[in-house]
Amino acid sequence: MSSRLQNIQFSALARAGEGLTQWRPLAMGFITLVACGLLVFVSQALARGMGGFAGVLLFGLLMLATAVVFFSGVSAVGVMLMDKAQGIAVRGFADAAYAGLLCVPKFLGLALLALVATLVFYLVAAIIYFVCKIPVLGAVLAFVAHPVLIIAASALIVAWVCVVAPMFAPAVWSGLPFKAALASVIGIARNRLVEVVLMQIVLYVILMVITGLLFMGLLPASISLTAMGTGIAGGGAGGMGLEGLMYMGPRALAHMGMSGSVIGLWLGVGVLFCVIFALLGQVAVMGQNLVYLQASASIDSTGEEQALEGVWSDVRKRAEEAKERAKAAAERAKQVAAQKAQEVAAANEARKAAAAEQAQQQAAQAVEREAARQAAEAARLQAEQAVAEQAQQQAAVAAEREAARQAAEAARLQAEQAAADQAEAAQQAAQEAQRLTDAQPAAAPQAQEAAPAAPVAAPSCPSCHGQVGPTDSFCEHCGHKLKP
Image 1 (spheres, rainbow, N blue to C red):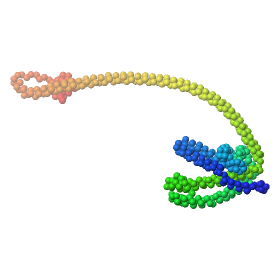
Image 2: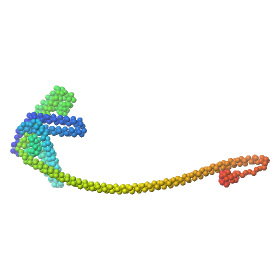
Image 3: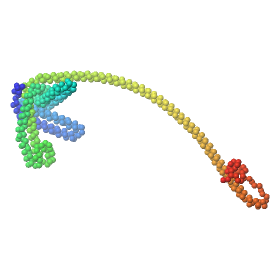
Image 4: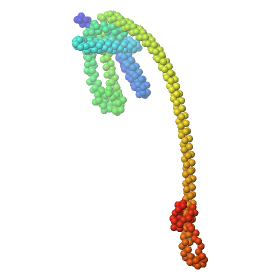
């Protein structure tokens, strides 16, 4: 370990300050930021203009393009600074941009590998924790396995944060292919993890010193002069501070009534601080390149590359086997599906035959039911006809009876009328007879005197003409009423 530490040249990390003097990477970074800003502005404008799902989809595609442009630009800056760290001629803008674009798929592959490794680790941990559920033995296993898993996870996190993520980018920027860059990073993580962590700490100290030196004079000067310039140029927002541009923007400042001079001051301050932060980023990238070059100088990554090749071969072999198994499973599934299809077809045919037979039976039953219904309907019609004929006969008999009753009633009424007429005539005759009888005593002396008396006629019934007494009220022969 001491010999390895002696091989570290911490003084070489002082070259990280050379990132402050590289104008080509600075221009590339500025172009990248401008391009990303324009893409973001255009994506927002188009999304608002189109709206709906199409606007959201276009916004997502443009933001993806923005991410590609950003990482390509950062990689182009890294490629230029790697050329400077290696002491070779710095590439031009076009070559650096093309090399940076080729680095994006490699970063994406590393992210996918990290995701797969994380999932595998947590899957293994989950299996171990499930095994720990076994009584007695599970407690002992949990006592041992849980701390081991924690240490392994922490080591992997430290390796990722301090070695893999910081060292993979310089390896790619140096021109290594994906597998070679990954093998180099794995070799550094296995053999020089402590040295790399120490160099990272030294780099952070250098970065903090440079940042402090820059902002020692820049921050108070920018605050005081910006406040003074804002107060003199006009606007009334001199005490707002540097955060005004960040949170409000030049358009908001213009709406507040600030003049063009004040807006120019704020924009100038914003651009200045963007340049400062870009320079600090270049210092960090230059330092990472120097750390990688020192860490990989005495490491032979051939073994790791062969191991990775073996892993890739094993993965491809397993993938081929899985593909063959999938094909075999697909063939079996196809055969099973065909067999099931035949069985289903046979079952369908059987169901169709059974359904046809059932339909025939139902049709025959329907015909029988229809015949029975028609017979019942005919019987009902015959019964209704017989009932109608009987009703007609009864109506005829009733009509005859009614006619006879009406005839009898008419005869009775006629007889009563005749009897009434006879009674009236008899009454009149009786009255006449009574009158005559009353007149006879007075006329008797005269008649006796004039002539001999004539025989008196006896009264009779007006109905049967039978002889009745003068004082009788009813005829003793027919019962006719003589007196009213």
